[in-house]
Length: 257
Image 1 (cartoon, helix red, strand yellow):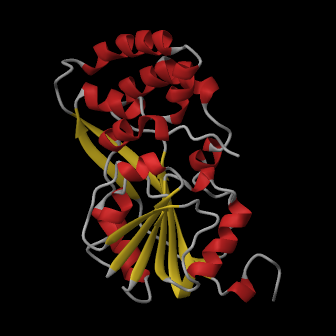
Image 2: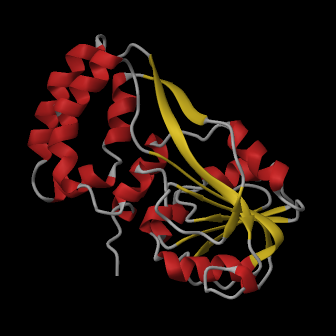
């Protein structure tokens, strides 16, 4: 059973994580065969559910963490459930769109793909996306990697490698769709950036291993490059996006022709 590194700071996670660009939801809606129902799988704090709600009649949002669901907003047309991605109580062929954001690398992929094929309506669109590193400017980015990034490095879970490689190593039962490059762009203060970094699973592992003072010292050294801590700077997070139409069950990766 995988460890849950997010429930313990669910409220802080919800407050610190950036919102996804509107263009991402445009892609989902444009390729969905209908606008009846969408599934925000591993919804976390409900960011994707909120973005999908204007496009679909109903958005079902599920997460294995009750604490994360508790931190999600109550929105018209959005219904939450506490369930793992790999085994849900949704009826077969329920969804015109399925979105997984910042979570696919944590799944049991073979079990999830079975569930994906079961709950997808004919022609349903599947989109998995995630962001890894951020960009401020070359000098700051290099200093972050050499300082705080190096301190955190031993605490990343192996699954994060899948995200860093843009999910290209994960075999999915979809007919691929090409999408334009997407990115999250925010204007943040130093405090906002650090709140985001402190929401990372690797940071939570480091703190749990009593490395909090080391991280605080590394962050303090980096702060000087930011300048005035209340000043706002542009932060860009490129999105990795895998999209496609879900194959009928008989054509999935189980080998049936």
